[in-house]
Image (cartoon, rainbow, N blue to C red):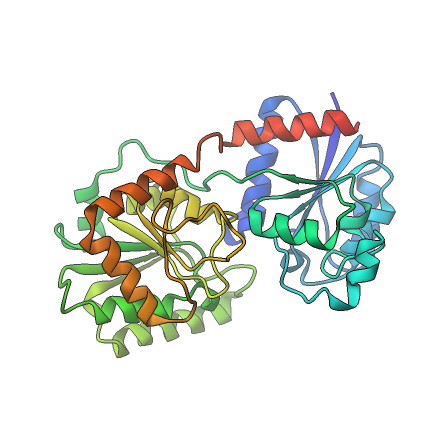
Length: 365
């Protein structure tokens, strides 16, 4: 039975998606029988050296990589040279930085614009979605890339009652509820979704927007989170939508599931486009919600009219209005994309993901 050293940032899973993913994966691996050594990595040279020491003796070292998890420090990128066991790197954020100055080093397997020495030194690079996989294969043709899709990050509550939840949230029983779920941040595009809902009030007077999720996260500390919440609340008032927008803040997982079950459709108007690396998006699929996304062109799983409705531009109220109209006015389309989104989740569960990791570790060890 191989022993795995799991290296990751120190973020609180309640305030960071990668930390939540890592905690769930470690729990599932241990249930599967994999021996996992938990190794937090601090930014800076001392943190990298301490992590390498803590990983000694493990059969496989697995690093969960997102630049934000290490405060954009470049030092964790040297862990590929500091650890002796076979290295696995899961890339959670990728494709943001220009690869131009790094093209030759990447193709020679020397260095990577975003991960330093991690991708070149990894025996296997794990990616969670098609967009990242395409970027990795293009930049690093020599890398061994394995795609392991993530599961939803909220379990469907079996006893959720739609009417009770709506009363608790002070939403009318006959409202047409559009829900957004996830960490609330400027890049999630909620200003544009609020304006789209306000603009549709005349056509759909029962339309209501439910924003579910905390503002404080690794990317948005307490003071910035409070300022953004105040800004977003003011934006709702300025749009004349105070009576048709509900902002819950952070909720426990069971209440998130109840809120999703009480909605009619979901929207993820991310300013960089949505991909299936979003556990929140997958949770909406799992709750049977027809879903609107702004899409990255390279994520081929999000197909307009089949698994989602695509708003084909970002930061654009008009395309969101059109996408909302399509779902609100076409029940057959809504049913089709809800079923298509749900079908994407076949085989996506934490037990299956743990089994795939265990098989990978055994092969490398």
